[in-house]
Each structure stands twice: as C-alpha cells, then as structure tokens.
Length: 335
Ligand SMILES: [Ca+2]
Ligand SMILES: [Ca+2]
Ligand SMILES: [Ca+2]
Ligand SMILES: [Ca+2]
Image (cartoon, rainbow, N blue to C red; front, side):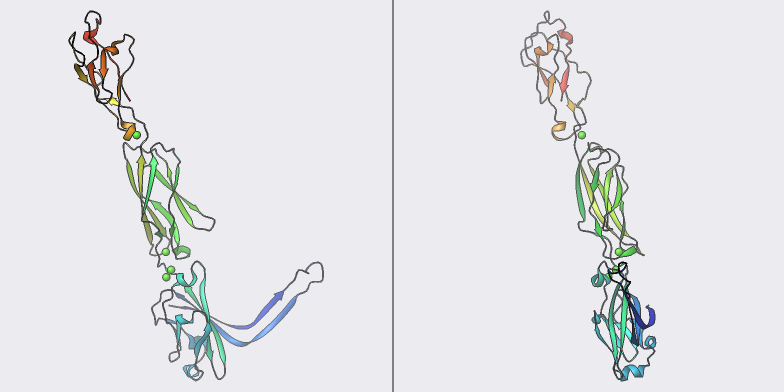
C-alpha cells in the first residue's frame, strides 16, 4: 500500500532580502527560474515491507508507457539510499529491493524520506522520486536492565522519591514511549516526568510508610508502554529491600515472673529466667537484660545474666533483714 503525491514543478521563486532593509531602499531580488518540465513523484510506504513489494507504478505516475521506459533505458541514478529500491522497467513499477528499517535510516528524525532520480535517455529526462518511510510500531520500549534493586529504610519520610530507570523505544510519535505503569502496591505511587528533550522518566514516591517487620521486601514491576496499535511494552522488575529502623521495643513474654527462694540460699542459686523478644533485626533486635535501680537496694541481692535473662542469688538473703524477701519486686529492663 503506497500513497502517491504527484505534481509538476513549473518554477521556483526566490526571494532574498538583506540587512539593508529599513535604512536603505528595500532591495528585493526576485528570480524566476523556469525549469524544464519535470515530474516529481512522492510515495509514502511503511517501513519493513517485504523485498519485491510494489512501491508505486512509476510509468503510470509519470505518464509514460512501457515502451518509452524500455527505449529510454529507464533506471535509477544518483541519489541517496538507492539500494532500497529497484525499477522494474518491464512492468513500470518501483519495488522494494532491500529491507527499509526506518529506525536505521532516520533514527529520531521525522518525517523520514530519501530521494533519488529516474533517468531516461533519448531524449534525456530526469525525474526525482522521494520515498517517505512511515513508522511502524516494530519496537517495544526496552529497559537496559531487567532488574532494579532499591534498599530503603523503613523510616524513609513520606514523599521520598526514587528515580527509576528510563525505557527507550526506537519508534517515533505515537509508536514511541508514551507512559510508565507501576504494579499496584500500598506504599508507592508513580510520577512520570518529561525531560527537556521530550523523553520521559518515572519515579516512585512513597505515600504510605514502609514497615520492615510487616513486609521486609517488595517486588514491583515497572511497565513502559508505547502508543502504537497493537501496543507494545517493556518491563523491569523492581525489588525493594526494606532496611530496618529501631522502631520496636523489646517485649517480655510475661508481664510478671514469680519465683521463690529460700533464705540463706547459696550465692549462684538460679531463681528464674526472664525472656523478652524484639522484632527489629540485627543489633536493633538484640536484647540485654538488667535490673532497673530500686530504692530498697533489692536488686543488689540478685544478679542477672545480661544475655540469657537468668537470675541468680548474688548475696546471702536474710529473711528478717530483707523482710519482704518472700515477695521481692524487681524491675527488669531489656534493651
Ligand atoms: Ca524498523
Ligand atoms: Ca518503527
Ligand atoms: Ca514502539
Ligand atoms: Ca524495625
């Protein structure tokens, strides 16, 4: 399928004006150049057509019959990218000779076209032909990496931003990159921004606090989509490792421990073991046990193993002197 635009250039009008305009009489040079009548043909074809696909019927569009093409030894001469097309003089058609990849030919430049000339001899005729190559959505947006990894503290402030990798789509216009989508999740929303050069990038914005204890790792996907039909997309996996903050206190597994000890029990007699746990990780979750200071000095009678929470007799206990010793109240700290 090719679109044709066919017109005859009768002349070219030039208009030149110099810096003298205003101060001196206006100088306008006008040239009328009358060319020898020549037909210029313009075809529009999609890229990536198969070799042999017909671009257009040159004979018809130039108003020449096949005999004239043959007698004039019609052929493609001088021009850019002449390898892409072939003139079938026997049929009067211009066909695709080599795969035309718009991306390779023009990159980001639009519109994309190339021009060459068809020469006929006896008498000599030269007909410029311009082929406009239309973009096809044959490239998906792609990320350089298949995987992104973030380490974010659970104490990160709301509205913290994390710039994500951009995707590239070699196609142009609607077929190029249009948007990014982040898989639904509770913590992050996606904001898309446009660079001064028109390219787009996205960032994740924290909208709900992270909680390492509830979810230590998030697996998200960033999808880049183009606007072609059918639409193409590219995906990058995002792993968010949530770093611990010391946001939990140790908790004892009992609020009260009760134990009895006989008067005169020897030093080192085990009494009870207390136990606390802390759901933070690493050093934030490590527990050491100690007694809080007591006015009565009761804590002096006992020792606590700061690592295990085992409580021992530290001094001889005198029932009469330490009259409340049958019901000692010790406050135990863990941190
Ligand atoms: Ca292509
Ligand atoms: Ca393309
Ligand atoms: Ca595309
Ligand atoms: Ca924590």
